[in-house]
Length: 492
Image (cartoon, rainbow, N blue to C red; front, side, top):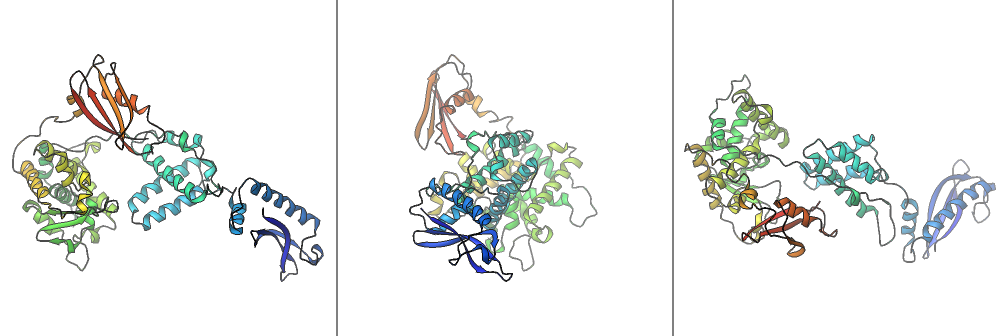
């Protein structure tokens, strides 16, 4: 056990002595400074404090230190760990300060866009609580639950914001709590009692081939601006659609050194840090969009392929202006309602939908063309990838949209689960829940009316040991019809 004593170390210029509590442990000594002072009459020849009032204060504090250490196994601690525990072991920690440090670190690690979402999340929590100095002790399960309830009218934030705050909280628990040493600075963890709701399912953003043609063949409204947003929106939407659904952020950051022989190479910014192949992709520029690509080529000494950097301060600004231009065409020319207007994502989704529904591409083909990692992400680190299949599929999509009068297949695959797998309560249904290939739960019975009832029944038996936001697989079999279908769900 550590030994304590109230002493002074040296005389100040004003003649007084600052009072310290000396801590000796495992043959080493350190000092804890107090806010007390004494004069020469309050100490003895060994520099020990004799002033009764100061001595009483120090004795009470030492008694508290002894009480704290008696609850810990400090035999193998060094004196620095003892001091840190005594000074910080029971002090509260500021969540707001830690959240800002967490966000700054994300930015430095190249996750600026995600960092912005985290910033919005903790700022919303601060506004709800009413202070920019939220302490971890404030964040009880009741407070968190009520905050989530305040987000109930939002479509995505009600899930996204709590998930971000929970992630910050989990990292803080690792940083501030040393469970092996018994140092617990954050004593509460509200999340096991908090239920985070699911975000609203977004509607399919894809549009029909007929609507796509109507958009691109619509006359661009006249403008007195040198570079009107409607023109930018139209042109970038065309680039997205004709370059296999490329994202605006990847257009913004495309580099000259990766453009050669009419081929644009790029690393998908969204997933490049999460993939061993850096999400590298190459897309050949079709003839139909060459004039637009050449129109925006950067002719300066910039490293970037397109001149979007000279016109827009950031990729977020670029994306916002593109979407404004697209929306203006929808509202002013196509007479669409504001809430029905398209965005850049509309044309990425449209490319994928036309590729599968109208050109016969498989989901793997679509994933490859959209530069998703898919099931081949490991192989892509070993194999020199041939991107020709994606180029050929891209040409088929362009051909189908711009060089035919074909109509989109009406409601094709709108309800894949219901069309493929309908059953009644009289039929024998078997459901099995898997995680990493292991069966976690199963049921075989009648009485189920739809797929969601089977899934809900299985998810009730999900063990608590499965990490949040992990993916589980569900296989549902109709024993009477000899049908089966697989589904995925994320653990909440």
